[in-house]
Length: 384
Image (cartoon, rainbow, N blue to C red; front, side):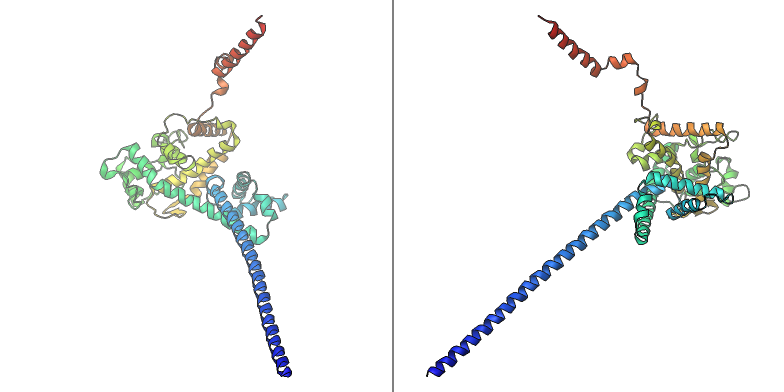
């Protein structure tokens, strides 16, 4: 009997130990699972944090890239600007007379790029090559996106402005939603696109342009009428009124300030004298970019491309840049500076603060109040 009891006790003790061992193993397994889950959660948090940081960086580059097509260069790739700067750095003494004009344009573009995005050179030098390529891709994405937004925005606005300014009869009004009917087939658009040296009101000219006959082929070698004040050029002085077209000013304001500010452009803008503010004054040069957008908005082309029939937008852009950047002499440069000053004042206005006389400043309430307070204190001090 005693032996049976011992066997029973031993058996149950073994079962208890086995069950305890199983529970311990389960507890250890649960602990390992908790640690594994915690590790995975940490890794997931790190991945999400890294992904969020990369997304923030990507969004930053895309946002900054929007300035490239508006301020830096309308067509050249950022890679071409960087390559030209590198070429000059490594070949400082090289005679580069061949294609010097195009190379100078790229170098000017690179200088503008580094002023517009002052972090570009330093950040590019610190990055791995793959990261650098990603940055360029995002900048390009932002640049092309801005150009698309601008052309889309001006599609309807230019039609609205032209209809309001030239007051065509309803059948001749420009449809703000349809570009197929624009271009030289439309009388109003044709008038604004007509080369400055030709008279759109002449029936033979209109017919010749539409038929693309000899002497009437429209290319980038002609300045369109919309570039001129009152959309009319002086054949004896083609510089007179050039780049003062009303639609140009409206387009600039719509792109760089706000569409609502483009509704009223009579008189000067109401802002600081930006001629003295280098950051904003440089933006006057970006008016050159707007001219291409207006030309595209008036055309019948429905999607962006650099060639429209016989008209090359790239060369058109370069002709405009050369007008401002490559004036033939001092007098021509003076006229260019005066034109840019006119644009700056037209868009942003002029500050008259410095023109105030000392007497006028003294009579203003801030200075008058300061004198009154000082006089009261003096009177209290002198009183018995």
